[in-house]
Amino acid sequence: MMDMKRIYYLQLMLFSVFLLPLSSCFDSDINRSMYEADAGEMQRENHIVGATLRGMQGLVIPTREHLYQFMDAMAGGAYGGYLEGIVDTWVMKFSTFNPEQGWLKSPFADPITEMYPQYRDMLNKTEDPVALAFGKILRVCIMHRVTDMYGPIPYSKMMSGDNTGEDLAVPYDSQEQVYTQMLKELEEADQVLEENKDLSSEAFRKLEDLYYGNISKWRKFVHSMQLRIAMRMSYVQPTEAKRVAEAAVAAGVIESNEDNALLHVAENRSELLFNNWSDYRISADLVSVMKGYDDPRLDKMLVKGMQTVDQNGEKVDVYDYYGVRIGIFTKKKDDMINLFSKQVISSTDPYLWMNAAEVAFLRAEGALRGWTMGGDAQALYEKAIALSFDERKASGADAYAKDSEKVPADYVDPMGEYSHPAISTITIAWEPGAENFEKNLERIITQKWIAIFPLGIEAWAEHRRTGYPKLLPAVENKDPNNSVNVNIGPRRLPYPADEYNTNPVYIGQAVQMLNGPDVAGTKLWWDVKNHTN
Image 1: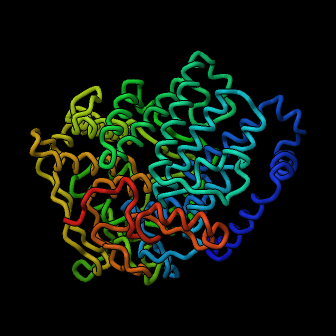
Image 2: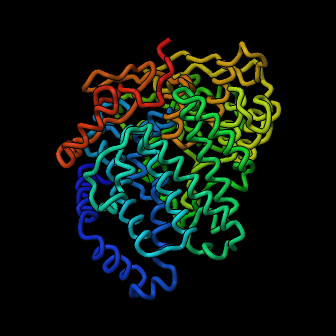
């Protein structure tokens, strides 16, 4: 894998490029070299709109492999309970709560500095209401992940007044303000799409790679995003969360796998992390839960590892699903590459943004809370499991959903160092009755966690919001601020040090909005449930 210091310096160079005058950077140099066309021709052929939409789409779940690594593997993968990095030279990393500053900066600075110049370019080059609605939706999707990692972020002021996204030193919004604004913008975008619902998909088929211009599917995705955001507010603003969620479901959300939000790309370069670089392997948490449930999706999601054991004086290779504890220091990477399981992924796979199973689990939780979700909680829960099985092309969903015996398995470390008893005894089958609210909530979130793999940032957010799934504590806690309780995990990412140097006034205001110090243990606005018991 590329040396991490080189990656960091490359990012600094890219950051500097984005701070150059945007008219020369985006209108002349980059676009002309890509398309061999002048600005007039590009405008006539909608090349600017297409390039901007695709550029923004590539930042929702990053299609650039190194940004994907920082956001979705190092941070989201570890904190969401899915992955651990096994590079033996990494002694400062997210999973042990002491990431290098360059690693800490990327999930914050890169989405902001790469997205806003593109969004500004679209605002300046087109008045097409549907294109602008798509851009607004994508900005929400990108920045929702950023605010859920850090908390307060620059948002509403980035495109207001004299600033058009070029000046990054702007006031932050509190996370509550960001959420309010995001929901407002999704509603505005949906209204535009509703007004243009009869527009032929041919208008944008060649300009975006999510739904290829299908307005109906875009609207289902928007409503599903509203539902996801509303559920995040369930403990801090339950009345508003209920209102938004019920309206979203009534308007029509993703209900079938044919409508899954999948970004289609020429090459999925995130597979390099697992198949070429071999830098990450599957967590002990995911393997133990799925093996305990005897989950039929195991071979659809994970590749078996190989352990060599001594049997009657002979060396025998045993193939099984082996997970690695999150929060360890790797002694020798070469000893772990073939031993531990990895993700099933290829360069031809699309990037998952949201699937029908997640939406059904969200509806199941809403119904559990007494919200009107178009079905009762148990039926939606079992439907969600069936949707996940269908998506993974696995059989046996009905029997799986009715299993009231199997529980997560104890973790047995094939290297013999970090074994740990299972910390959850939750079964799969639904238990009717109001007295089983918390058990059924754990079921919903645990099954959703399996179904949305590998969406680590979303999994981490839901783990923080609900306390589920229950994850094994990190082995090493190297938090320099001693703020992280390993039993509940980190609550956010600290702001990168560069922000204190380049935006000193507003970063101070942002920290005040946190209602706590700028450390990993400080809870975000929506993180109010007591997880310590």
